[in-house]
Length: 288
Image 1 (cartoon, rainbow, N blue to C red):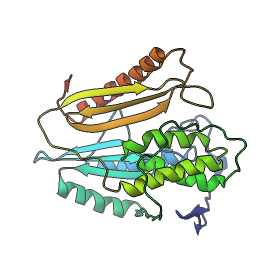
Image 2: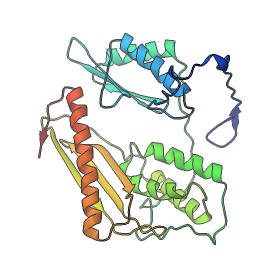
Image 3: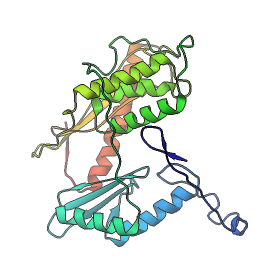
Image 4: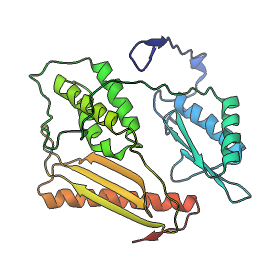
């Protein structure tokens, strides 16, 4: 079953697999990787077909990020398409190329426009309490798990264009398996913050400065559950913020210095990845 954003039933879904007995072990049997989620083999088949369509349209697939497709026009314009699970982002400076791409995708695939919902709430100034103490909260009353997961899932998606909520969303997403009332209140605070900051977003400025920079930071033993620290980084290309992340560290740091060094390592890995992506896009850059 597929549900709408408000939790009501949208439609029933079913899958039919015919002649499974014809599948031969060793011939494409164990090839299940695809840069999308859901079932083992169907995402790979879908992405394989999508890739063929993009290559047929003259797009080049990035070897570093297989979900990125780029096309340079004869006039010097560029069109880039990025696949995120089953969502697609198209951008570039070639308006005609982007329009033609959209027409071709509509012919080849079923395209659905995402719905938006409105929540009436009182705005607040911060997405999460500064000195929050969110833990497992075993003594609190439980809340509906599916509703909590759907709501946090939407916030995770939104955080890809709102870095100011990345940390708060990372905190509330740690309790998806057993959400309590205190966790839901923290989610509502993020919504209240978004209600008061509808104009915030990312503005990309055109300029000659293409210096690649990264800034990192970390707290120390900030998690009330396992005392692990949280790393954070943001990278800039010139004056533009291009990537960011807030992630709990895999081990318990024994000092604040260790936590900071782990955050720095995470930021350096991101810089190396961006370096290869920029080379795929044929963009010249500098390191500060």
